[in-house]
Structures are given as structure tokens and as C-alpha cells.
Length: 275
Image (cartoon, rainbow, N blue to C red):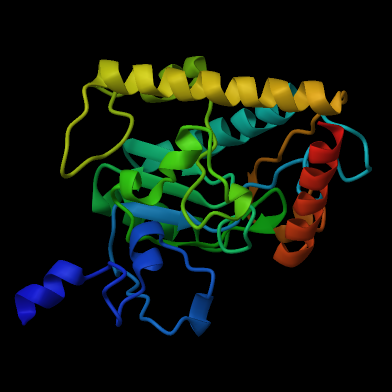
């Protein structure tokens, strides 16, 4: 009996423990979930909930003032945020993986997952982040059960064909450029980009896969840019502070999941009519 329970733990067959929380560290039902969320008391992974605020949070491709944004500026805004977070958390120890969700659902939007090499490094970072602010917003940090991001990531999204879009329940990881990745992770001996406990991947193959995904996403952004003919400027995120009153730039008020879902469905219908 014990072996059977252990074999189904964290799977869909497990009627006691939530499989999505086990794999992704987040669940759309939150505390109302009918299954248990076993929150770890220690882990090498931290979850910074809803931390990344896209410049087009209200309407994809458009800023808070309704002005169109250049996708390249959006990417530049993201990479500035990514480097800022990496350099701050790197003070506490070697970072094996830093992933930012590009999902739109409330329980995953802007989530930042930081996998340290050692658990005590994650614990030190968690303690240091308590009571801190970023861009005028409080940082909500906690340990996450996720240690193998291959199980948490949407494979269809990596292949650029996820039909669930931003509301997929698996991670849609937003990528940084190859140069920035080498700059940040290249300082570590061995240059390991992600942690794997069950299967090893050669650094050369991992980098080839990363380059392929980066080209796919670049092509997708270029197609979206051509379809919408967006032009504009992005906005830079802010640095860390410890007082919420020191907010330098306002974050736009984002819509709820239902409103965003309805808006995206409307865009899809308009695109199909144009085609």
C-alpha cells in the first residue's frame, strides 16, 4: 500500500495531494483547492509570486497610456528586470536556474522561480527578501517544491504550438538573449543552465536547444509585430527598495483573468477575420 501511494504521489491519480502544486508550485484554485498543497519548509527553489510586471500588463502590445509597444522594447524591459533580479540574488549563492513565467492566469502571471545550488543559499535569500520591495511593490517570496523545471514547463509552448495560450497551467518560460545568458551564467564553472536530478543534458546540446527556442520566439514576435504593426517605446522597471513609498514608476492595474481571456478571444476572432 505504501509503495502504491508513493508511486502516485503528485500525479493525477493522487486524490489527496495537488499535482499542479507539486509540479509547478502554484495552483489556480489557491487555498480553495480540494487537494493538499504540501508547502516545503526548506527547498533550493524560491518562488517570487507575480513579481515581473510587463509594460503591457493591461493589453498585450500596448502600454498603460494606450500607446503601441515595440516587441524589442518589451524584450529589453524584461532583460533589464532579469539581470537586476539575478545580480541581487546571486549575492546569496550560485543560481542554477532563473525562470520567469509568461503566463496570463492570476496564479502564474509574472512568477519568478529561482533555483539555487544549495538549500541554505535559498534560505538566506528568502530571509533577506522579507519586507523588501521592488519597483514599489512588496516582494512575496516563499519556498517552492519545484526542483525539476522539465516537469513544470509546457513542452508545446517550447515548440511554439500550445493551443491554450497564456492560460495554460504549465509554465511558459520567457527567454532572455544568448549574450545575456552567457554573461550571467557563464561566471559559474561548468555553465549549468538548469538542474536535473534524473537525466543529464550536455551543455552543448542544452545551448543548441536554447538557441532553437530563442529563434522560434523571435520569429513569433516578428510575426506579431508585422501583423499589428506596433511601434513605440518600452519602460524600464525599478530597482529594489525597502519602503513602499519610494515607488518611482507606477505599475498599471491589470485586468482579471476573465477580462483578459475575453480580450484575447476577441483578438483571435479579429485575426481570423483578417485572414
